[in-house]
Amino acid sequence: MIDRLLPFMLRPQRFSAAIGGSIIGAIALFAQPATAEVVEQDNDHFVTKAEAVVAADTKATWLALISPARWWSDEHTWSGDAENLTLTPQAGGCFCERIPEVEDAERITLEGSVEHMRVVQSYPERALRMRGSLGPLQSEPVTGVLTVALSEAAEGTRIVWEYNVGGPTRYEVPTIAAAVDAVMTQQLNGIADLLGRIDEPSDPDDGGTDDNMDPEQPGKPATDALIDSGDPDSSDDRSNVDDAFLDFADG
Image (cartoon, rainbow, N blue to C red; front, top):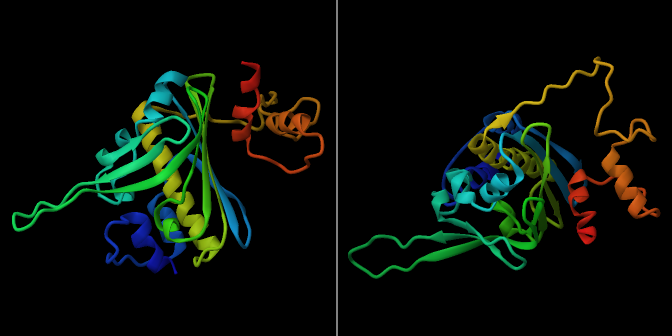
């Protein structure tokens, strides 16, 4: 399966490419410093999550985020050139790609286009949420939701990047989930490298308090506690990307 999948993941505009290897080789190919993992998967859905801290404030990070031509990988475009990507950061806005016309003196050619995703929520300097099926998922009856949440870190800005995909697909879920996770991580690394990555080493033996943990419920992330307090009937663990949307109504 991965032998058929990788050509689409690596360079979707070249369907005839032939790349062999195992899923381990695919993950190793895209191995990057960002923290990333498949956090959930079942027979008909999976969730990938990646995280990085960058040396830029939230405004500079937001401006970079909505300019994918600056950091998206050329290999993961249909045209082979990320310069053809645009993103309109407003509800209904398109994360789209222009397919340049083919230069041919013998005939008139036309430009094409691709819609990668559609913006459903846009909060400058805070969060961006889009719906769409990326890469090989475009040919499948699945729905993907990409949420990118920004928050201030001790130094710079923390980016949390989650892609939640659900629906029937002809791909084996463990295979496509691992491949998509690797590609999503590569894109996060692109923006992190552009803005300057900050490593945040953690020492579990330092005896300090983890700022991400709820002091009243040891072992439980504070963001989960916030979400639970907003919905007392909910017992499902949720990604902390949703925390970025909790207090917009309060200004």
